[in-house]
Length: 405
Ligand code: ASP
Image 1 (tube, helix red, strand yellow):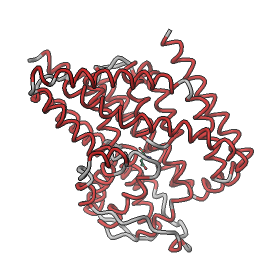
Image 2 (tube, protein in one colour; image 1 turned 90 degrees about the vertical axis):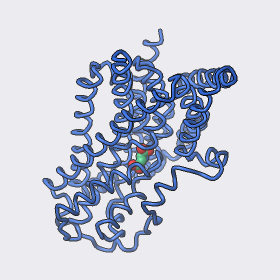
Image 3 (cartoon, rainbow, N blue to C red; image 1 turned 45 degrees about the vertical axis):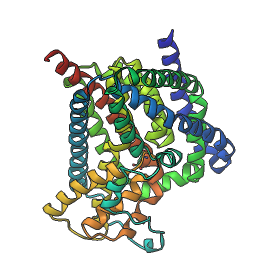
Image 4 (cartoon, rainbow, N blue to C red; image 1 turned 30 degrees about the vertical axis):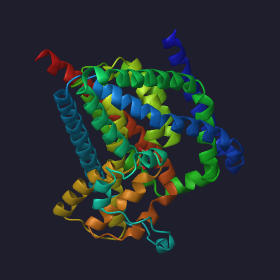
């Protein structure tokens, strides 16, 4: 029964995306009239995030039973995040070097485009903590909440009987939140339709979109092909490391991936990602820990995109980046992706770190703005795919570790 609802929903969402694209293409700005429906869907998803993350991390970590197991789970997760993000940036760098999408692009009067806010490496480290956990929750700053909840759950596991009722409370909260997610999913096709139609309309409709795309065609093609290449590699990791058949897993993930594409926010998609990965049968202990953390720090698509974008800007300005400068791009793009929040266009802001590290003009970001609303959706989808494959990998590897003692 659940399977039938799931597969009907996926079809409905696919139809909604095509229909939304068609309406946005043809009627352009007039589709603004459905924007509120998209906002309603997005805001409802966001409303679930904080309680879901809190309950999920606390039950996930306390369910491990022993703080040492947390170290193992955390270690495997971080190794997965770091290696796949570095892989993504490497693919981005290779493609941008081969295709040279920025060569000959006119830089014209982009200096007039407003510069994004300044952000530095230390800002990323500082964003791991927050002076007030309630304010962090109110501002949806997930990383401090996650770290707090990991510490809180680890402490609960050391309290014996005293900790048990608290853990049971959060187990109930977690179940209730997941139930609400299944209800909100029923609303997804309408929400997805409205988001796509209104956003394409806001970008000026079909003709304006085609003009934006043709102006930056080589750049968009490089980003999209690199994202596709990385997605294929992620599927191979799913097959060979997590030992899961690719198509059935992707089928379960479809609603989350389509929502990521429609919302351009991996945080807003998180409730659906958790539901999808759970339905795909991944060990819940891994899901509850790996997905919230992954949605916040593991962004393969964003890292890859930042690498291509920075090389594109360098090429447009006629600046040749040496091998060692490209290695700096590799490292800083990885950090910038960790620092990017799971919200629309966050990658544009953290890209400043990469540009500054190799001394490129920040105004170069202006070159990319026209098409970013679209590429953001593509990279967010890959971010969510990376997190979901990560949950399967960590689930599998911790299972092996369990049996081997
Ligand atoms: N929108 C992306 C996400 O939510 C972040 C970004 O690359 O801008 O995952």
